[in-house]
Length: 279
Length: 288
Ligand SMILES: Nc1ncnc2c1ncn2[C@@H]1O[C@H](COP(=O)(O)OP(=O)(O)O)[C@@H](O)[C@H]1O
Ligand SMILES: [Mg+2]
Image: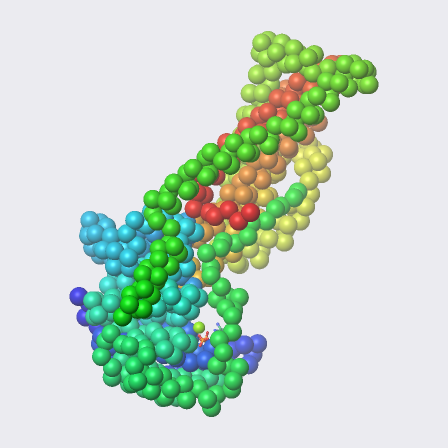
């Protein structure tokens, strides 16, 4: 069982430089995430949710403020932290089991145990029988589940999820939310889920962090003290949902609506287009 | 209660429909690929060449073109058989194959090295790419006079020109292939803390492989075309030479037999590469 650490984010700010101009993306984020907690982050598109996750995972290193894991500063990526990207980012040339196996490439465990662990995680996400299938043979929901298994197989302390179900239909999404919840309970790891679906955030989260844009800030943190399994139609659930929705009212309208996937967010299971060359 | 149970089963059904069963997946892949498509492709490939052959036959037998200029298919076939039996055809084929394979191997090796270096190091690319582009624009025939002066008209000339023909598409496709590896894949590698070697082995090369392979196929086709050109212009052996020699002696049947041989061998070699591709790139979905 993974030992999850406490994640302390204090006064975190981040800016990008675009054509000589400074673009503030995150400003003064302060947030504490306890071991084993499930934290949902909601916010309109472009308010820096993905950037925040990229900072937590260690893909971006240039920032102000502090990100501490059990008191130690986060430097670079680590096998203790896993991430599921918005697009599944499976390698199309590898089968399901090999894709999942990438998560164990640098794990210091014997081959035999790796194989068992991969099989366990295929079962965990309900994909037994698809071990040797290639990504192009999977539906969107299945591919996303493989991505979750790939992130979990190395048993990270913290799992970050960046709108993992954003591109799926409502039915599949509800199903995967249930499964994610089950995995969270079973593995007792910390999960941080970014979503623009308020219902999803409340259904899964111990608390919901509401962000506001330009620059991205924490607007409010809403605790969700409801027992699992949660009923989306229950009075308390709806009340919290309305509470969270109200936070969005002050925000510019077009920001609340999620625009279609941006070009660089598009599913990346295509490879560079080949081109002809004539001499 | 009943309502929710019904909803539950319909959910289950939707779930099942959405996901192909694993067994069906395998069957679908094998059967569809092997039986239906290959038969169809095979059948569709024949009518056009047969029509050309029929037209040739009629044109020759009706005397539309003088027999010295366009020998009949039968004459070509018997000349082909004679040349085959005497060993002349095979001897020349062997020489041509050696040249093309040697030139291609040298060109492919240099092309891969050049492409990989340009793909992995932008400094190297900035130094080399402009010159390389200029070099690539000059066709084989353009190099011929200069190279003849430099290395004479021996084997070296042929190998150099053939390898140049193969090098260009391989280097360009390798470079572009590496450059176009999606940044998202490289981030996955960073998250899992791949070493540089693992990054190259597990991400960069597999991701860039389809365009690299395409470059190899183009390179091979170009090498084969360059071979024929080089042998036509500067050789005393080989299939290209047979074509020139036959024309000089006005033995158009010999010319045609050699042309047929060039076609057959070029086609077979490309077929071998295509089959290899099917094995290596089975994970690719065919879009169209
Ligand atoms: N590499 C980058 N360079 C410049 N600007 C960026 C970069 N990545 C993100 N941004 C900008 O930062 C803002 C927040 O982006 P992002 O974190 O992706 O938002 P979200 O995930 O909430 O939709 C956007 O305005 C985006 O254009
Ligand atoms: Mg995002």
